[in-house]
Image 1 (tube, rainbow, N blue to C red):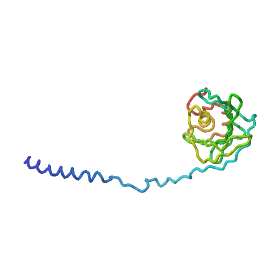
Image 2 (cartoon, helix red, strand yellow):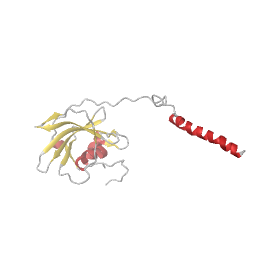
Image 3 (cartoon, one colour):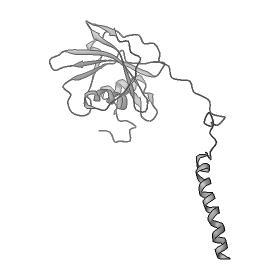
Image 4 (cartoon, rainbow, N blue to C red):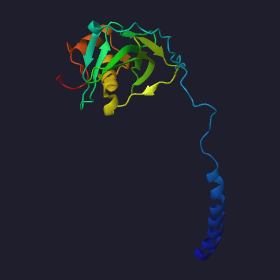
Length: 192
């Protein structure tokens, strides 16, 4: 009897082995054209950038120095606090003055978005006491590299509310830049 079962099970095992690749090729899951979404979820409104008017040329009395963390980059950075603004699109727009050790200044008008990793865009560069606009729609990721540490510090410590991904009120931004409140407020670290 045992030999009979062994002879009978061998063809069945071979048949199952041949059938296995066919069934493995079939997908056990139903593939939908779109992934299922709960009925309570509605599509959001895509973010759209507001138009930007260039600010007036900054006055020295309105400049507040920004000292980035990390090694000295050989430049001093200043933010024009008078023309610091938060747009309806939640972009923080500001004028940056980068001054070399010989007193030469480079100016730019930039915007920072308070996204999880931060994004920035340059709108214009300063030349001859006026701003020359740049034709670019590209937002770039903020880097923590030494050459751009100032931008990272503005995004992380001065302009954006941590974990809310929203701009701070302008008055708090100015106070933070002036050192009147800790820039690492609500960061999970003790103040310096």
